[in-house]
Length: 452
Image 1 (tube, helix red, strand yellow):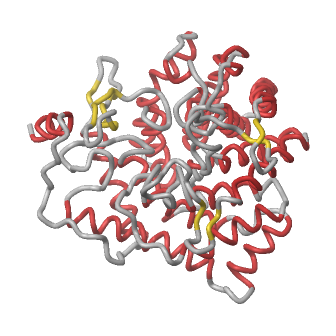
Image 2 (cartoon, helix red, strand yellow):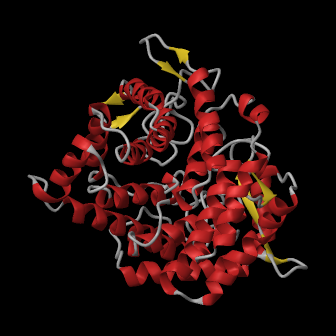
């Protein structure tokens, strides 16, 4: 009953009743592996308990999304995507199976994606394969299924992820005006290449190339002479991972590596050079051109954590001074961060923890000077011990998030109350739990917000 009451209150813009009277900023928390893994398991149980069982013994959820009116939210059924849907939620179960080997987690993941696989096998154009995107569109389904299958050791699920690309038509690619990771060709490239890494398919690579060529042909000039992408009419070309240059550049750098085509690499570097002009030394962050009140967010979607993560990913494929400089800037400022007011993967502390984990783990994978820089910072040079600091900071951050949740009764997500389950990967507890689990086993689980 309480959940229904809070849903009604939120729909009319009323502030949720807190689960307790305590609502403080988190202190330094105990981020031990045992504590984080126990919490990841507890949140999995909550996600299962919050599901509606379908007639075919599957699961269905609803989730809270922001409404157009400030302070209100709407309730929607989960779709098939990584961001708001089945593929994202299934990855929590698949991750737990990879780490623990317990069959029930495998069964949950398979039951969760079963309707998605059925639609793909019958050629049914479900919403998430009817548009582009790496978090919301066909790229998210291709990557989500392929990664679930990989973690479960089930090649048939990986193959279904590859088959999702069959829904990607030339007309759909040509209609893209977002270009970005979330809704556009860049994210579709990342999803396709993530699936390609698990099952090399010429068709996947050909579709990724078609998306890459669309991006090359869709650039516009800027006052500084850079050719980049303008997806929002009322702003300059944006910075950041989800809708800005960082994510697009990362996708093109990865495509350049897969194809050997330097045109993608050059476009990626040009986008990073454009974005680098938005960096403000005084705050140690890149400006978000959408925001007037908070122009320097520190999230996966916008700001330092996401841009730093994109540079780390890009450095595995592209050797360039401007990429190296971005890594240096992001890693240098990370130690000054305090936990933010949101906890979820897209906009909160879980996404920031993913950046810290990758900063620690990618030092041997980055090419050229970027790799040398990270090896120096994280192991050998004057910042020796920073690798351990980055891992420790991720655990400390997630431990603090957990401590605040234990005091207030809920994680800070769009729902803003523990009475309403927010089960999704990028906006809810599945993503928070996955990041906690991954902090305990970073070498066993892929970094989802890099489409690893």
